[in-house]
Length: 422
Image (cartoon, rainbow, N blue to C red; front, top):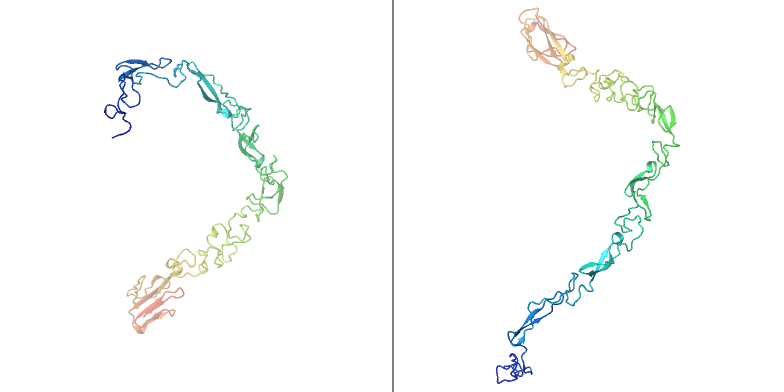
């Protein structure tokens, strides 16, 4: 129960929350006032708002003998805008309307001003697009605010060069540091001492001035100069060279670029003669060198087929079982005639060769001579059917009987073994 606000606790219809009824001289809502007259009668309406400018009036209704306070269908005042209308319904159109503006290009970009509204349109803009404009300079800026940059400097971006001779460098035309004009951005090279090379080394516009070089005559035209003949000039005269390494300027085949041959001459001007002709010092020149020259310092001539082995040369003795061409005649071992020996068997009743590589049978007839060729150092075994009292071997001691009626003979170029049977 709420105590203290109710002005008549004996009547429940009278309390602070009750609705005041006009004309009964009773304070129903306990606000200390008893309405004697009503504002309106329920169902009454009246015009509200205004029809000035863009505003439209509305209708207010009476509810519970009071005006509701709501203006239905009213269009009220709004903020004034630039549209030729009295938006705020004060009887004036577009009054006191202005706004900030910007203008300008280049260095004048961002200039500010204001414009006003007249009859629904913005105008009278007082922004100056050329405020701050200056005379155009070369600085990659639009100084005069005309929308163009450095337009008075028409050579910007063109190719350019600085310096002379070997100091000449190319670049591009750019603005100078002060902005008053243009310059080439290339940096001139550093001059050097003038030398004889057909170039302007010291960058003075002249070539090879005051420079002299020594050239050597090339009488045999082998591209190497003779050390004994010289001339001084910057440009090489015809028939001269810039080196003096030729050791014989009367023979075009003798110069530092020639191939050494075995002819007792220093062909390549290295102060050595016939080097490489006899590497194993066996007094036989290498056969490969004979292709381009005649043996010179090799006392026994050329034709050495193995110049890294002094035991192999044209003067060596062929060894018949080492798979080498010891005497450099193009044949090895059994293919070399030096290794092929003859075994001769004189008339006998019967002599048979029983070892490889061949076999001879003289048969039963007397006075028959048998001959066969064998490789040197081959051992052959002979058999015979003669009586021991009447057989004998003639010749070298290598021709020996083994006591069994057979004989072993080692083929040797110094002997001929004969077997006689009587």
